[in-house]
Length: 511
Image 1 (spheres, rainbow, N blue to C red):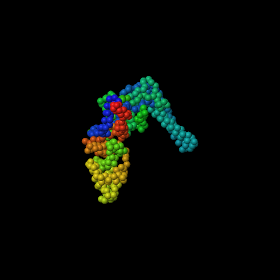
Image 2: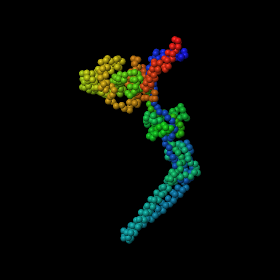
Image 3: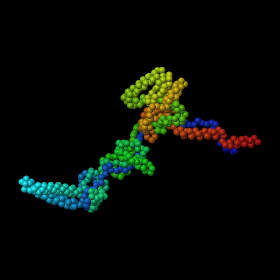
Image 4: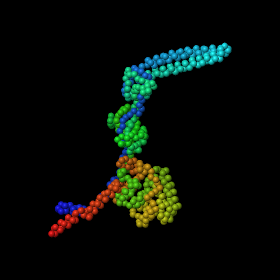
């Protein structure tokens, strides 16, 4: 073995014999004040809020177009004139037919009067009288029919003058002077579109939001819209609606969101590309901790393994904090909630005394709704005194630990009657963090508020000056420990061939 190889092996053996303590498996992050802003961002295009296709009910040649692209037109203003000759001829013909019908009605009226006089004097038969009455009714019907025909002809003549149906801006012109158009009332193809108008006082943006963010959005949320034409001037709008049907683009599921914007100045134009930021929530200068430090009840076991803590001790410390957490919640809810909390505490004490009295036994109801079966001879005051010791960082006596062991054996601290709800994992949820107190990691139950991708607002449970522990996953720590154990076995038992080579060298040196 060369001298360099021997030196390397000596270093490896020396490192194995003098192991330095591994660094703590966590990152200490102080709870500090910061601004938390939650928003969803997406891109979209400006669209008119209301769009109308203008068509003519009259067919024929366009004689005049009085508006052009971009004009603001008031409702009822003349926009297009269509050749009126055919409708005007129809009006004249209908008028003539009405005059004839009126003359026939006048003649039939006179014949009816004479027939009535003759029938009264028995000069004509009843059949002749009925015939005169029928002629009068037909003449009267012809007058009504002629009047309707004339009215329809006048309407068709008016339709040759196309007027604006709304107050808006002309955004598209599809015809020109001299073009022959068809009527949508007579053409099965829907007729010719003359113009398109839009009310640009209100515009909207249709944007696609990823399904992971759509749960945060609801109608009425404020939004900021920026366009390239005015990069330093954001426009304000609000979410109008969320489309129910998803859109899949490149294997990504997205939902359409409509944002409505007031456009009284007319600066936003249809087709402009936009960047939309929907403001879900904002908290300024609030106490916050990293999301990576938050743990749920399911994560407490793995976190305790990483820190080398007893799960039972962690559960006891969390249970000891419940009275204080409940008091903090009552203070936030106000005077009425405080009154209800005091009443609940009195009721709980009465139930405890009725169950076990001062002699112990019975049950104990925690402020979060869990019922703990107390062993015989153990009172609620004793258990709360033990909790107080944990809170103050003191070590319980062996007798007190024996009491807690009895409670654990009966299912205490590990279960509870309270059912977990969806709100436990969203804004305003309850979590557990580990903090350094007295140089030792301790679990603390906290309540969070608004949360973004990195940090969560702390509503109760922590104060400025506390430091939370950001822990790795239990599987990662276990993998690292297994690797270190393998290296230790290799160096402790000798690397393959190390002893054999060293022995042979010693023999040769002795020879």
